[in-house]
Amino acid sequence: MKKKYLYLGGLICLAAAGVACKYVMTGCVFSCEPVASISLECVKDMEECPVTVTFEGKEVEDNGVGFVLESSNDEISFDILGAKGTDIRLNFGYDTKGRKNGECLAGEYRSILINGKALPDNVMHRRFVSRTVKTQKDEGITVSVLWDKATDENCVADYRFNAPIQDGLDVEGLSGVEQWGRWSNGEMAKFTFNNLPQKELVLVFDVRSFLYGEKTQQEVVIMDKEKRELAKWFFEKGKVFPNTNLVVSSDLITDGSLELNFHFVNPSSPKELGYSQDPRRLAVGFYGVKIRRK
Image (cartoon, rainbow, N blue to C red; front, side, top):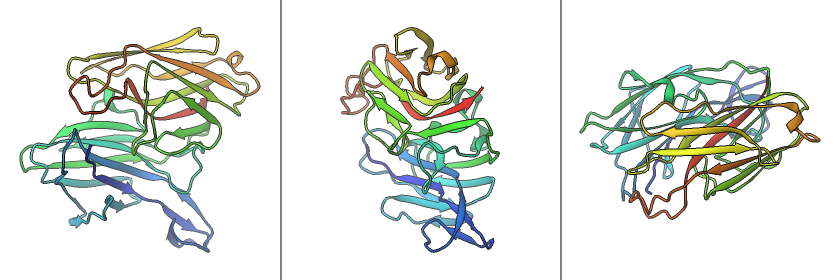
C-alpha cells in the first residue's frame, strides 16, 4: 500500500523560563504536552498518492516521508486537494514523541468535521479515530479538528500501539507496528498487563475492525486467563461501533498482573477478499488502550 503521512501536531514544549521550544532542542529543561496528530494514506495498492495539503493558507511540502504540520491550537483546519475521487484514510491520534509508551496523556477529541460535517459518534472514539473518505473530483477535503486537553486524574496507564511498548504490557498475536497501530493476526491474541493497582479498573480500548466486501461482520470474545468470558464485541458494517470499554474487577488482578485473551471469530485476509495482496488474517486493529480507576 502506497502511503503518504500527514502529521498534524509535533510537540510544543514550554521551557522553565516560559519560552517555547521544540522537542528536538537540547540543553533546555521543559515539560511537554501532546497535541493532535493525523496520518493520511491512500487506500488500496496505489502507485501514487497525488495529494496536496494546505494549512493556514500555505501549501505544506512533502519532506520525503509525508507532510508535517505543527500547531498547539485547540481548533485546527487544513485542506487535502488533488486526490480526484481517491479513497483517503485519515487516522487521528496523538503525537507523543518524547513520552514513554504507557505514560498517561491528556486530551481527547471533541469533534472532527470533514467538509463541514461532523463525524457521527459511532466513529468517534474520542482518543483515536480512523475514517475513510472519498474526495469529490477536484474539490478535495477540508478537515477541522477540535480537541480538549483536560487531564484524566483517574488514569493508571495509557498505551498506544503505533510504537514499541517497553514495559507494563506484553502482547502476543498481533502483527507488527504500523503508523496508526497494530492489527490482530489470526484467531487469538493475549494481553498481559503488569504493575496494576489491586482495584476495579476500566480498560478503554480504541480499535477498528476489518470489514470489506462480503465480510460485513466481526465478532470478538474477550476472556480472562481461565478462559472465562468477560465481554463480546460485535462489529457490523455501517452500524454503530460496540462499547469497547471493559470493566475489570479487582479479583482478576494477581500480584499486579492481568491477563486477557481475545478470540477473533473467522478472521479474513485482505488477499482473499480482493482488497490487496496482504495474506494476514485480520479482524481488529488496535490503536491504543487506556487504563482508568473506576
